[in-house]
Image (cartoon, rainbow, N blue to C red; front, side):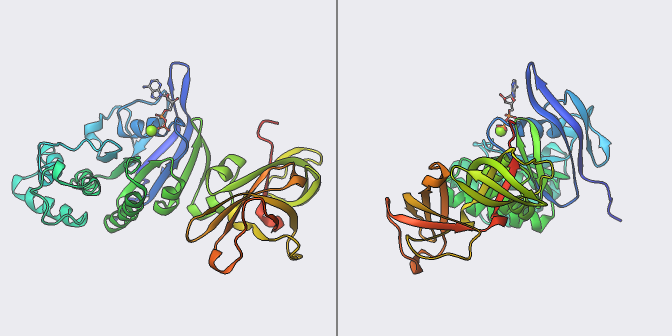
Length: 369
Ligand SMILES: Nc1ncnc2c1ncn2[C@@H]1O[C@H](COP(=O)(O)OP(=O)(O)O)[C@@H](O)[C@H]1O
Ligand SMILES: [Mg+2]
């Protein structure tokens, strides 16, 4: 029988450094085998949270449980946790195999079993045959793989990743994201991953917690987080999102009319507390907006307006436009055209029309109202 206990549980955990409240009342549970990503901007408390789980820092208040046991008095080396940080901290004078063997020696594994285990983990990270190489004889991506193997070779209950990919170039980073996902699924190791990279969070996670300023903003699976962001902050942190401020003029269940500049836009809200006349903030994903040459009809959209192209960026598989709409007070609207090969390219200063549907204009109460 496997234990039904969550591998990790945080109950109302806070951490202050003097006057700085780095982590505020964070609670979550992490089921066995799942990957949780803590996503948020630099300084929002991600590393502090991981350090408390690893046992390097104690919470100011609240309690952390690992396998159902409170761990406040358990030192880091007695927690069954593997870690990979941005600075890989591999031992440069040792070979790849010696690095991977190190945690096994520290934990007094039977020496006869160590070479077999090291070989198995070299294989898992696809470095078979490279065990005798020294760290400086390996590429950045290969060093990353050694660090993963070293963190996992002793079969920890939990793997903690603190932005280990952030120093890599884009292509390698995206490759390693998929590698982490593959290895995690192969070994079914319970993982907490910390990043400020939204794509990495969406690709790697079963569950994402978005943090800002020490507090949890939203916890949801990637699809729900992307489709139903609970606040303007979450909406703008994930995806390319245009933000508009306006006043609610008419509210009917979830349908809202919003006065923005000279326009009345149609939007959708999940917030029942929004009153007629209240200031609201609207978020609009770039992929939900369509763009047409000036004068072309687009009667099918709930919101349609004239604009001028301020910027166009060709990204190969898509064109990204930034469109200025005078009727909205010149607020920029971002537009993806995902099929640029089959559409007309619009140049800077071209007059265009843009349109989108009410359900894609997400309306939130003004956070500072
Ligand atoms: N040892 C410390 N002493 C004082 N302040 C700290 C310490 N560690 C972190 N902080 C502060 O706590 C906040 C959260 O930091 P951190 O957890 O490193 O954020 P993140 O990893 O999300 O970038 C920041 O304001 C940071 O300056
Ligand atoms: Mg950090």
